[in-house]
Image (cartoon, rainbow, N blue to C red):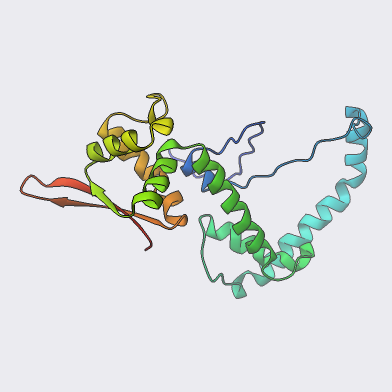
Length: 208
């Protein structure tokens, strides 16, 4: 059975949940403030306040939707991030939300940068590659060569076989996952085939 569905998913937790690059690239991270003991509400109190505010919330959402529908044809983005339609839609709704033009994209870009930082810090492959390029510059070789080089240079990041892939095919798979993160961090990763056997070579360098 095939079906199309578009619906946001909300994930709640204490640690950084979007540590996988493919999820991080499609996520908006919201850090909620701690509620002081004197400000907490009983559930019944909360829902009573929500019911009172619900009409105003709905009116605000409908204003945002109608404004976005009216302005959408004239809104263009200088850059189109992942979830570009979503970014364009919210940008079109900015006047109804009380935001100046471009405010959403500025906030969205800042959020994506913080998500990238958290994703890199939680990924030893990305961390090791960024460190290697910063320390040694351009690198080229096979996936096996890369695994050996990273394990030799950065044992504190690569010693745990549960988080750093040992097999070349698994490392190659992880490289595909972290490639968007590395690209946004200014690192270009490409692959070529060379020699009579068509051995796959990995090229990593700083810049486009």
